Amino acid sequence: MRYAIVRPPARSYVRCVSESPERETINVALALEQHHAYCEALKAEGLEVIGLPPLEQYPDSCFVEDAAVVHGEVAVIGRFGVESRRGEEEHLVPVLAQHKTVRRITKEATLEGGDILQARDLLFAGISQRTSWPGINELAKHLNLNRYRLVGVTGALHLKTLCTFLGRGIILASEACPWLREFTGFVVIRVPKEESYAANALAIGDTVLLARGFPRTRWLIEERGFAVRELDMSEFRKGDGGLTCLSIIF
Ligand code: CIR
Image: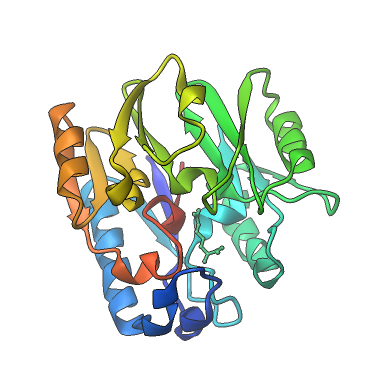
């Protein structure tokens, strides 16, 4: 059984951390509808959805991906690089501990799940404004990783803001990605710059969940034989979040 941990946005989501000028127009009721549709799509793909209650005290807490990295039988609880999110991760520990061995990042370091891209047996680790080198180092030790590639993240919030792994050796990546050349050994689907938001997509088996309204990217993914299911992500985009950010899947 594969699980997906999710948490709907709270009313406080309107105060999330975001660079988007559209943050002021966030509609929480619509965000909740979109979140519901997201959960239904996960279920339709056969995942067991573990729905956690909204956390009013943490405006960004619907973006559960950032709080932990699950790899094999281990869940590494991260440490947020942004102050307002610190503490969110504690609310995921009990549920992760039911399924995985829990390890933690120390106060010396920061690590957010959005900066870790797992592709086949390789892990790409982004050093960003949110994730530090000591954070990656601690993660590698907890996971016993011998092989991973470091990526300096510039021009994006997280590594996965601009690239995701679809399976079958294929990485979906925006042409705006300054680190495209790191993906040697993979087939890269290049998302045109004007559709960059669509480079954060969620692949489950042969289906790719894709943000609605990016026809060129949709075509490029379908051309590779995946089924595409579009989801309206407008309210999460306003909070600088994408499809992978809304769940932890294992
Ligand atoms: C934040 O700035 O932390 C949230 N507003 C957005 C987090 C998006 N998460 C992700 O890319 N993994």
